[in-house]
Length: 480
Image (cartoon, rainbow, N blue to C red):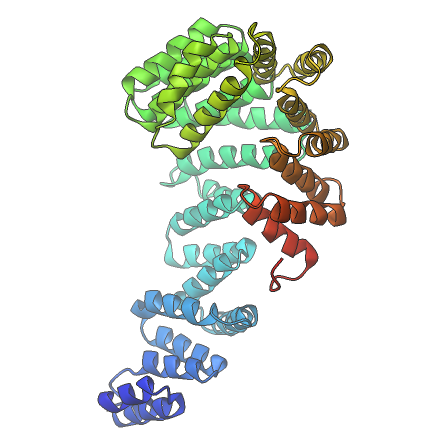
């Protein structure tokens, strides 16, 4: 019979293939032909019967779950009507689970909800399964992390809260408490937030650290708290104290190095550049061939750039261009080009020094001072090669201050006056992004995305611009 079935399969005679397996099942009731039957049903378009066959398989034997997941994903996701197919599977699964409380089918339903980004629904059935199987929140912890990774912060927070409510003796309690605060922070930063939001978040950090106690296991949370203190509450003294505690709690490790890098950054914010250099240099020395060591070297070069030591900075950047970490190599190349393109044309280096200082002021959260300095450069040095960078930096400052109209005006100026310069495509893309996401002008955004595709075909933004253009046009199938 197997030989006959293979012949029908090769010839794509799926109706006869189905009949062969149905006959085989009837003649051999103790042999399981479910997978073969389901595959044959799928091939002739009997999706509903195929789904029923797979679900029947799971009701008979839980160990089939992994195979069924793979086959359903491959089969249902291949067709244009995949959403309808997933909806059908969801309805059938839900109906069976409500009737039988079958654990394996419940697992499949949770998996399906996660695939469809329906984390609230996944939470309901994960909670039910957790209680039924007495899993102490293990499955819920996994769901919380998946929701967090997919920016479903509310569902992640709710999932962590479920574990916390199980009590402090629960094996996942400490990790859930830590994770919940970190997710709360990312949730706040991902939207328009008020000072009250920051104060409330600060209290969550404080209470969690007070409850769990400062220890090596809590360093990641403490480091995150230092970031909140320094960059959102401007309490650099507190941030420095917390980071020093983190460094003391740890042996030499990448996490300790991350704390040192952040400490160096905060020293740089407070004009203690030599203290910053010490931290960066320690990390660079301890992790010479490691990406974090390359990052430390880049930050050390950036300090030299801020200080106007362009030759020394350039020498370090030349080494970093060969970094195995693409982001570091690209950042080094970008800063190196900025220096090269502008320092040779101005023998006094005054313009480059002013621009570097403006960037340092931005780094120090002194946006207004930076903006004024950049304005003075446009007045003092009209037509300088740095003009497009100056306008672009001003646009970034306006975005950070949520002055989106002012930012679009600056991007427009770059695109019109510096259309052949290196930042033109960056300006047009971010101009379009602001129009689409912040200013509710999809028509103009669509026009700008199209411009990138047609006029800047070599841009790193071309692929994304084409995708967004098609989405705004409402036609995903026709080429631009």
